[in-house]
Image (tube, rainbow, N blue to C red; front, side):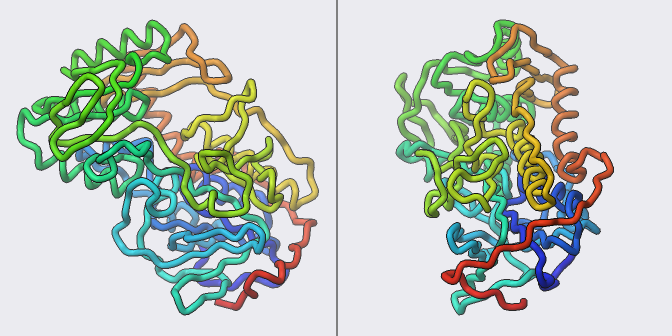
Length: 442
């Protein structure tokens, strides 16, 4: 990894913002596809380590996760890491505004960049590349191609009290705050997990397994596991019952207090409330001229290229990509990784004059950990509907662990260990529009 080098003359400047699964894979794959003398790849992220978002429930119950520093991950690749927070994107002027952030990170709905799949917000160390800096501490980073991977944050859906009283596990700062709160709880205290999706199921079972002395309750808007196959749903109910988790089905939470949650079926006592009802796209995209949908996700074509700005590619939770049957891909690691491969290969093909490859983005299974000893692998159709078959029990837990390890391995090995040939570029950088600040050497 290179620090502090100015971009060479005539290099095509690729800026990747957000280093979650999607952003980190895209940066590394581009570095292995293109010649270092032709492109300058800058990866902007607010944390120095890769965050395994799929393991935040493990972090919350006190398990130690292996540190994965980007300095090791990108050593020798030519990727330049900027530890900074993204504050704005000028899609017409082709610049990204970055700034030093407060150390320690923050989390919450609409909080700092990429608390979802792209890290939290911590301090910049001023490493860097060319850009112009204003007196406000905001630096303008010019690009020729932008890969937008700022991910998502947790969404409270504007339920009263949720932002003030509930905990999230959408990123490391939130998981660490929850970890401290759970550690302080005495035996018999009630914990309520709101949301019956994958994150809620994993959080509830992990907490119940790690802390059998707590009273764990799950509030689900629909029937428990109503999207699973009959075999999958039966196994889920069996594991939840075995862990002593109380499940309130077809229950909508309408408010969160300091010591309770209010539902359509009455109040539930809650020393701790954990909110897992879904993710919201990072808000920066909606503040740009990029074409987004109503939820703020950037609309892209099959190559992950923005429908409105051809020099912008969006991947991961930040992008609205169409899967089989023209159904939008769900926000998940399972979607983000192939989107990153597609974007990186499309950019490399465009710059080298090759034909842009398009691979069908499809699903194979949903992997759910139910504590450390149990799991559920629900096999699905290409468009994510449950098949009859499901893998359960210890073998499923082992499979899920392999998937998590494989995802992290894939970030460090973005071409899946296949030797990549770095090809020369044929597309020269286009001039930066006159409305954008001129770059100055850092």
